[in-house]
Length: 82
Image (cartoon, rainbow, N blue to C red; front, side, top):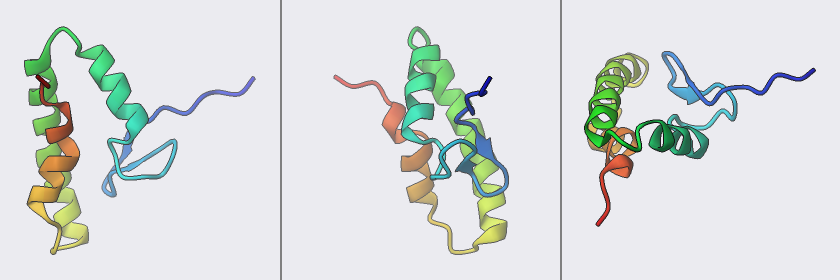
């Protein structure tokens, strides 16, 4: 029986454990949007918390990490459309 790998971040690199790309990957975004479909504010708070953690860890690995790029990566995609 094969176990499906979850699309969760590996720390401190913030790469997806399942597919290896920058987290949140597309699969993680879809899962999060589904989980928080009735509570956009909670999703934003959760992502902002992860952003703060990732920014600290990634800055240790690469002092030139772009904070604006991280905000796009972690939060902007999840904003309500319309």
